[in-house]
Length: 332
Image: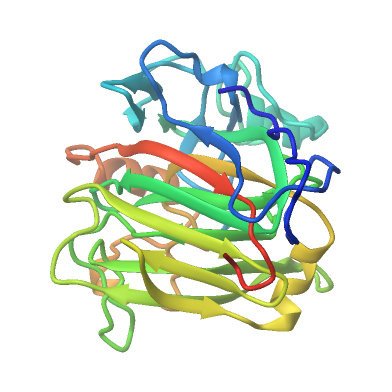
């Protein structure tokens, strides 16, 4: 299906949802869907982000996002997003970074060798991160997916204001995830591994010398890993709260007015992707460090991660479908 809003019905009931600056949709109308059928192309609905994410600093992630069928493809009528070892040139063809100077060279790659004047990253891992052309404001997002499994994997299932740049490392977003780790705890011995499902909001405070994330999450714990099989995940975006459901059952809501405010200004696009590491995803200040044998701020964090992950058995993020429905004031 093309990434566009469906025509509004003539006798539309009251709805909160907006789609590409249009109104008039009925509550319950299907606004967008992708069923990832074998005969379609990913580019029908999705735009790939292409850039290095391991460019230094505590918020780096240990991947390069690429547009490559080895990392994002439709197989058996499912979307597969996988991480592979990067054994290729450091130049990323089709780089989407909008930065300039050294920052752009770091994100897009360059052919010269590492030097003291302009340090470079070690070999990295390749993965995929994609967003839709389609945008909407307020609605119900339904995703049937199997979460990835493997230490330090982190799925990107996001709603991102479409005004944010794709290469901005500090963008506000709504997200739902289960980490890939088999064993991971915080300093209070609470589970943060693949048996814990989180839904929440990240908003960046950019008033200080360095941007800092403000977060609020709800969690659902299980005695199995969310990557063991397919499940139905739901995000209901309303004016005064974000509701999260698992297999049709409510497991939490975020209703902090301050955190919700940035999402009342613009429509959002959908993001699907898979990354590894990252301080927002695996915060050193929160985690029990006996489970995390590398520091996000270490000068050679990328090299430490590479050695640690040499023999990792990672599984992909697999998505059966994703759909967006219009809602009324009650979220129906």
